Image (cartoon, one colour):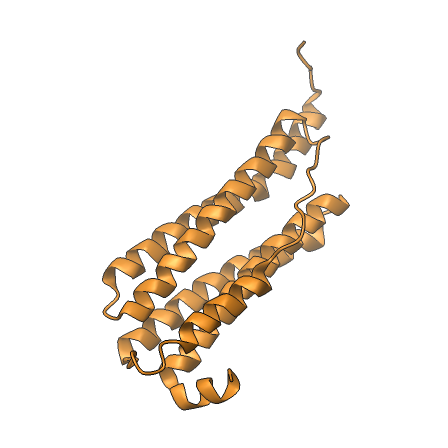
Length: 177
């Protein structure tokens, strides 16, 4: 069975899908960025951080692609429920791992610079999703953008935590007892 869409319906589905194409591209670019940063990292901590973030982007790519596919195949009628983000738990686990490195890691200036660049990347993605959240009408689409925002906020918090660890380890450990 073929569904014939009017020109207006076709434009509407394209308008609905376009931000998710951009989101997919952002996640793919993020993965490449973090993989390259991990390869260039001089310290194990920075490498592990960026490998973790690259794996996070893999999860985002999968979620966005699945969401996009459902919207595309249903002509926008089937909007899946994304569920709830477990970003906070993953951040707690990452910080726990970071605290175990107390006597092993001596952060450098290049570590700080790497975290600062990555933080700018994450903030840009979060801004894009915030804008799309405000434009969305469908509650499940809004929920998906909220999920993406929560994920990006967690990444930004993780990077700020790493940045604080690199800039002032004593303060970081004092705040993470």
